[in-house]
Length: 108
Image 1 (cartoon, rainbow, N blue to C red):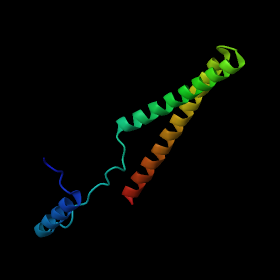
Image 2: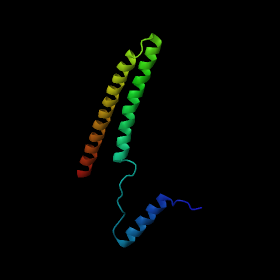
Image 3: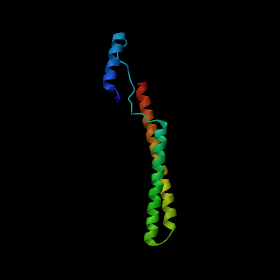
Image 4: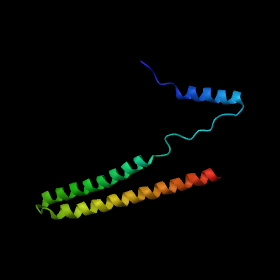
């Protein structure tokens, strides 16, 4: 059974090879820091669906308690949808701010 190589040993070997070539150590990007567009999209979909599901659950629960079907279900599903959109927009705003800060750091 084949095992994955140790990434620290591989980096050390690459650095030694580059040092012998005279170029110095290789600069690498930090892996795991930047999210792909697919990961960002899934995060936003999950935030929207979570808000809607919570709103539906609360509305359905209140309708059962007060025996007033579907009034609270409709109201809280709309509130949950609005909350999901608000969280999505906040996430997008934060990611844009982080991207701007990292671009500013790269320029400096």
